[in-house]
Amino acid sequence: MTIFDVNAHLHTPYSFSAFSDVDQALDMAASEGVKVVGINDFYSTDGYGAWSEGCSVRHLCPMFNIEFISLNSEDQSAGLRVNDPNNPGRTYISGKGLACPVILQGREAKLLDDVRKESNLQVEKMCGKLNAHLDAIGAGFNLDFWKIVSELTKGSVRERHLAKALRMEIETRFDDVLPVYEKIFGGVPLKSSPDNKAAVENEIRSRLLKAGGAAFVPEDPKAFLPMETVCGIIKAAGGIPTYPFLADNAKGEFTDFEGDLQKAADTLKKRGITSAEFITTRNTTRVLEDYSSYLMDEGFTVTFGSEHNTPALEPIKLRTSDHPEGLSEKLREINFRGSCKVVAHQAGLDSVDAGAEIIMKTIII
Image (cartoon, rainbow, N blue to C red):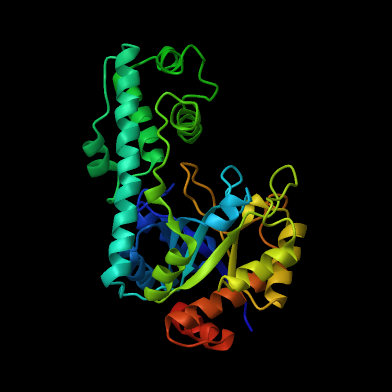
């Protein structure tokens, strides 16, 4: 079987992304030789049409995915950190291989719409607190939330959009931005170079929008659907519920849930989840090979991605934290085989060979 490079988890401007638009993401994929690409936005399938069309003209094979933040009450009660290292019970869940065109309707479609509205409302409240902070320090300007929604988003607004809007407003209004940031940060100087836009936005987010920041707003529990409900929405949309593993962090640490891999695999199976994914730049090659191989042997479909849901525009071709040149051949094969299963699932089939054949037919020029 010929192995092709895959990136199965890419956010776009339909949630928040390093990319200016879908075309930029797909142009980069094509130029880097990545043949299979998966859109994977938070709470949104709105980008599927553009993704499908863009892949078609570039002879790329599309995957249609989605991402949720769910809550597992059992893990929360036990104080168990799952794949959010700071919030017990809070669990990121992806859906892989959803139907395109979208088939979600009825109760599940309303649930998805409601949770996206709750997420947007939380950011709107955050913008209000940020404006109150700007007024209190005499900054001389405010942010227009609906202008941000109109000009910087495709309907889903995230706190990263606020950080971007604030950076842009400061750059537009002031020639010397350093005193402005120091004032806004309560006397703490900007650590990043003003020319490093991604770093500045990350610093704004960390200092103002996260817990302890002047514009922090706790998320309403209504913004987190139960894990079982999220999995039901994904299945109703034709997709495969998928657990995103954090695996090892920069210090070599694992969350409570993921430290015992056999127990994690058994628990996920009991919850009806037999698909897993990894964001490869988080992990060392050794850990990623160990975890992904183990899960594949346990019957999981395993895929890898890069997210690109920060301001930093990084390569689409995947790499690990200790191997910047790319994935090992073992990891490339695991990722390709898992992606073949997802592509086959999208076509109503269920085998690696069927998915590989679809990919070959799609990418041949």
